[in-house]
Image 1 (cartoon, rainbow, N blue to C red):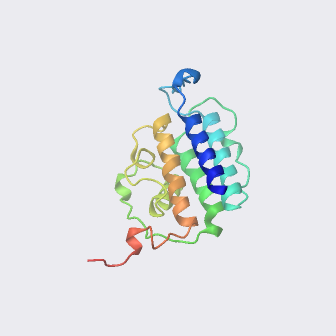
Image 2: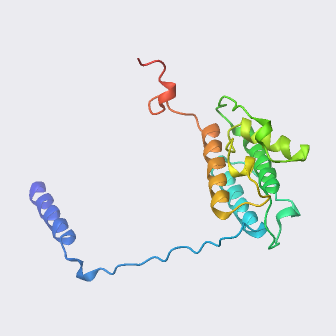
Image 3: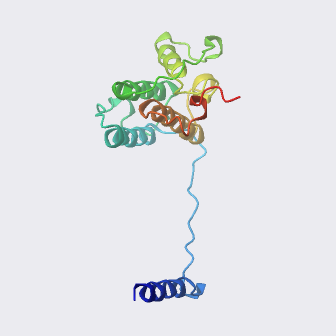
Length: 181
């Protein structure tokens, strides 16, 4: 009896999925519109609010509210302001780090920041692997950052925070396998 019911259900499910495409509507998604200009302070603030929400949800870390330096203006955000936010978020996540990767070598002669206060945060982020050594945040010619480069920088930062806050598995992480020669 169970075999008969199972066969009938399996056959019915095959018939449901074997229908033609005439009943389905194709959904066309429009491509996102990306401005060619730099990221504004309002856009950066919205992004960092979402990152802070992720930290609260995933890492169970409360991030202090942002300073007023990124609030509401439609002026371009500077690279120094982005680095300052990265440092703030990094410091908030530091208590839940379970893994400390090797520090990255920093060539300070290639960094394009002039003020020592801006350079120290950048050097910290490069040493911890949260910012690319030769990326647009570190060696860019402009003081602003494009939408594409900002997205890359935030993704790179979040990937490193993910590395530091989650214990890697020796089964799936090749550099933890040891010498396999």
